[in-house]
Length: 129
Image (tube, rainbow, N blue to C red):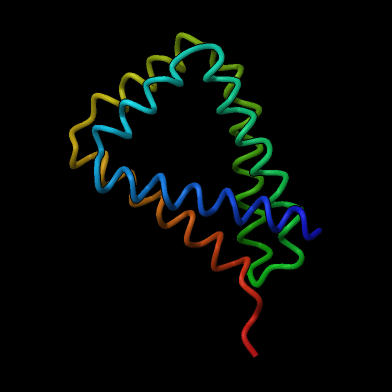
């Protein structure tokens, strides 16, 4: 599904850029993330994970690492389903906890977003040869 590949690529770039933002200016990323500590933010977070999970799942067969994208897709889909059940209060506490981390801890967390985005983008590249 070409459309799934494009959506996965866009979300991979988004993840990578958010990670870079967190490494370079963690306080600004924390300010941005704070805006999601609400009922609307919970649903936006769940919807992003749902779209990403489905896109990764459908893009997997045409990728150079189908199993990787399927596993990441399933993880994203499970997160999309679980997030609404955790409730707004618990979600807000999670967002508040993350935004109170030290800049070094935020930078370390952001490295995972960079690695995740880079892995997705690598998997979506055409196979060499």
